[in-house]
Image (cartoon, rainbow, N blue to C red; front, side, top):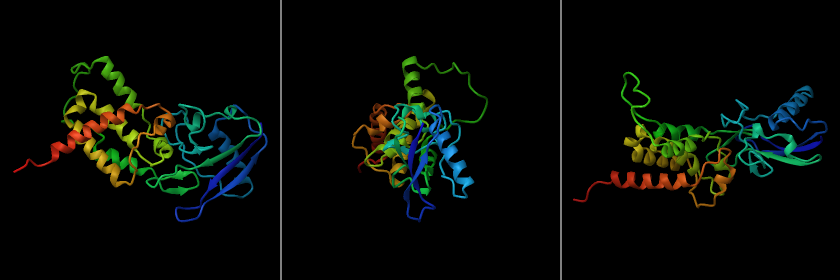
Length: 252
């Protein structure tokens, strides 16, 4: 199988980037996309050239590290699939493939396909947790949770924080990510006491990080490899508004 890769190369955050073309005449269609990049990097190293920098970790669609835009689509053309689980058989022999990093103001490029996604970490630190007293662990069945609620919380908890929602959004919004993190905690009994305060703090931190506003284009849901639904954004907005009004001082 022969492919032509057009890859974004950028030496550092302050350096100008450019597209570099690489010919791959003999790749196995059963390779994952990241394995193809591994093969390309081995050839570059053998030629004494700088290998392509890209994020990866588990390569099982779990960690969310493998963020890249493939042919204009975050993680590539296959729905509900991360780049590490995207196989070359998805493409046709002779295809030309364009590979770029996430494009968002809040995700500055570090090198090549690697971007700084620490903004997500700061949003989580602002409120994406449950405060509990120390002591022995309570019985797992002490707080019964209806199956419908548990299923909904697990749907939100599938978010792997890859940033595809941000990369796909024309506004560079992180609303789907924040909504998933707010919802999976707020739906469960342990997270309800801080539900509104959590939403307010995380949304405010998201705004400070420079993410754009949500205009309900739906690109985030379409690009999400875990198929997180837009309904979680509506749920978060309700919690945020209630939390904001609760913080206002009473009129004298």
